[in-house]
Image 1: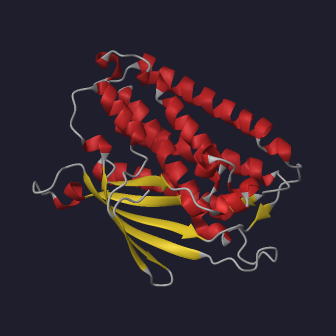
Image 2: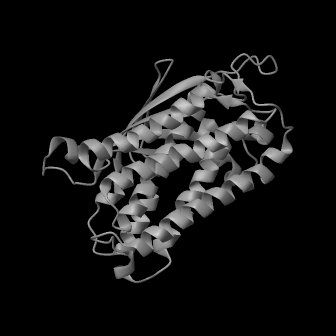
Length: 300
């Protein structure tokens, strides 16, 4: 889950290049290429990526022994929730990088190319670092998830010149972290990133963009979610935890695409752009892999 932790930090930091000023004119995207803005975006992203990799190396990997490069197959762990985390990270790194270049007035082709390259390249570097860790290892299934997230961003830009389907995240606290805080998080700030039981990943599709109707608000989305429950360890065959009741969960809900809310404030548009990775809590229908149905007035 360190990938999502790093991405959340990067997503916020990448936007500092145009959120620190209170001047609407500065925050408004350029109509043509602004070389100073583009240079600022490139330097900021390169610096943040480098510092993030150095920080990961010093703060995360130092707790584990190094090894020769190895490949592992972890595709059956955590009910694939960790793979959804990789897809989510790659998607939003690409999206935010592309949006930053749009702010600089760069061409659409460059927005897609550099957005996709940054997201996939950064997470590939992290995966290689995993490969030299005794605790982890390079995972091809992780790389496939990274490529899927990058592809979701790039393909929509190529097809529609907009993001009609967003990847989103929501979270609620569970009792599992209390049982294994060293693995699933000790406190809310860690559980947000480590407790897969409380995380849900969503595909949030804008209804108006597909149906082309004026009968519904332009910001209204239909969201499909996935989560797992009952996981105290990643390995379903862990002999130390033989009685895990691991269940897959599926959700149908409404959502809000914040980027489609009309506002004349460039500051609000920027804030909405950052917050658009979080699923808005709304009425939700849940069904799990045992066939049980449940209704939530508001689901986090």
